[in-house]
Amino acid sequence: MARYTEAKCRICRREATKNFLKGDRCYTDKCAFERRPYPPGQHGRRRKKASDYELQLREKQKVRRMYGLLEKQFHRYFKQADAQKGATGTNLLRLLEMRLDNVVYRMGFANSRDQARQLVRHGHFLLNGNKVDIPSIQLRSGDTISIQEDSRKIPAIAEAREVLARRGCPDWLQVESEQFAGEVKAVPQREDITYPVNEHLIVELYSK
Image 1 (cartoon, rainbow, N blue to C red):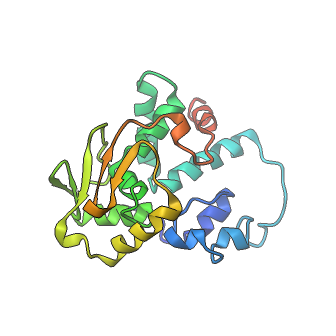
Image 2 (image 1 turned 90 degrees about the vertical axis):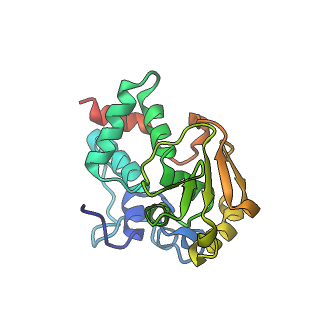
Image 3 (image 1 turned 135 degrees about the vertical axis):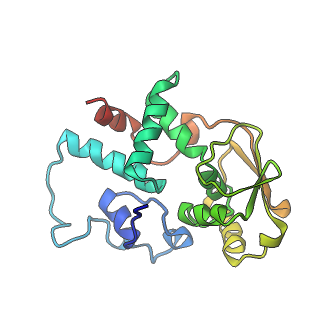
């Protein structure tokens, strides 16, 4: 499966927003977006008026890359969100937030969503007491996530737990840091998703 393997900081600069793809580095002065807040390439500093289509496309690309999804995967989530009751954009963000790899990241058990995806695939987590290795599993309210006892000394997990206080944990999740576990208290509402995302542009793009 094709994956983006180039410098992740270029993504943040291209989408003109900090997507926190590099974990703890994004909170330091080393963050490339803080040092060079303009698109990469020799014409990155040029200012031009973006068309409506470009704004819609860039918003879709920003969210897709934020959660580390391929185009077909993202489109599948959109169709699923469109088939549900309620606002399609809110449903889409909720589906993305309730992915297992995202919840692992949001609970502070990984430094980034990419790292969370890798840790889940390697079988370091338990979902409701059962070993899982599928990052895209959709969680529900009441689900519990814990780290396997043999995996609790992994340096990446220990480092991520130290960064949690700086990053913060959303209110719809509850983390028991000493027990290496957490629980999904509720399904996230739109106001709980604080990333700078305009989901209406994505809906407009796919509605054409």
